[in-house]
Image (cartoon, rainbow over all chains, first blue to last red; front, top):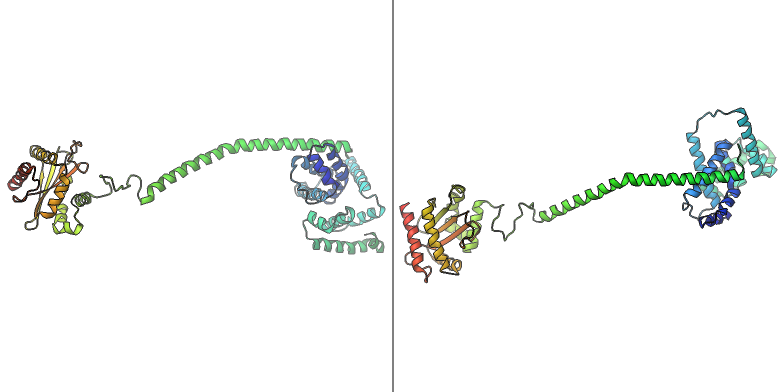
Length: 183
Length: 235
């Protein structure tokens, strides 16, 4: 159990500031992860807000047995898939709005991918199949274990392992020999 | 447009409150909607259960409540009239079915039933059945209220003179050779002491001149038997 679980327990005990700690710690990573699915940073942020709001509404849903981050990301994935199911195929937006979105995405990326190597990998994995993208994201960017990643993706550890193996092979092709060293 | 950390936090809390409120509203709506349904279901279940309970209590013997037969009841609705007579006869005389068939009583009763007479129209009815080992069986109906009154009067005397009338009668019945069986019906008067089975009275008496049925009240018995014998002879 990480700090997130401790903060959430304190929040449930009546400490309101503990919730702000959760937001501060997980806001960017959750939004970035959701964006991996929805490819729309505003929508990803909106979904992330809903995920955090869910912590307020369903206070006793989290059992403190799984990792708090895993729990948040599971909810994030579920809501992201739900969003994809119901959203319009084509989103019409103002050019300025689109520009803003790109800026916002870059800011989030900057927050998450402080490491230059990770940024290079992030660009490369954008070209991979969605499942492989998510598996690499969870294991290499979020530092989750295979088991936690498997739980979030609702797959077995073996499947996650296979996805990562295939991902590595593909990245090698995309990034050349350097790619192998990056991950 | 990217939100600041504070905006993000406020938005999360605002939505959290909104969803909580929505959830409470939905729960209340659910309660308001479901409560009458649940109540109806509970009431319905209670009614059905009590109905079933009553039915199962009544159907212990395989009969509905209306047809329930209590062995102690004198008025047995599920029995035919002939069966009622047989049952009463057996209970009164203590005779078995085979003994009764020896006396040809079954054939007598099958011949006609006094109940099928003018039961509703007449104030009194009386059936006299003569049972003899030597003679053919015989039965008759009294519809003359004067004659029946006379018989009733005599019977009353006879019964009041002996407290253990039924017992003596049974004893005599088993020993005697020749009998008359009287079955009275007097629906309008239920307080007569000799109405042994509700509306029915079955009296068995010895018709032989030599046999003394009731030593203490011989004259009364004789008067009665004479009257009945005379009536039967003249019928």
